[in-house]
Image (cartoon, rainbow, N blue to C red; front, side, top):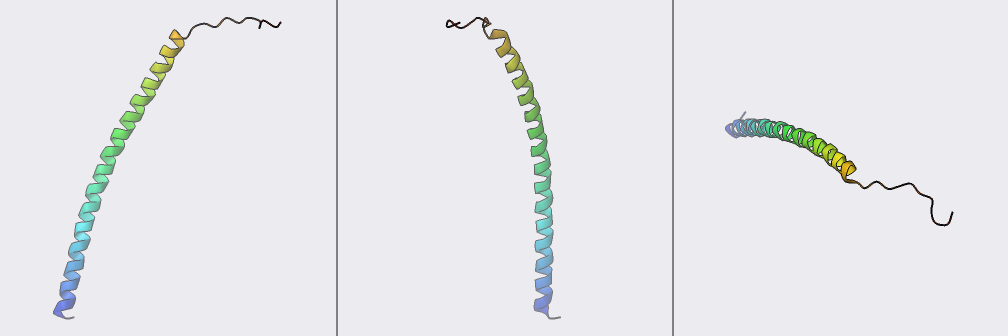
Length: 70
């Protein structure tokens, strides 16, 4: 093996190590973002339920009557 080949191997190993580090950082960020997303989904579900309850409480009662043409 020549010195040039050794340098290339060292460079490739360095690049692989840097990429591995970046992948680990990104994986951690994705895990954190997933936690945030799950929390937001739960809040949205709770707010949707509350909104539907309020909507039902404030909806006017529509009497059931025969149409005028009957």
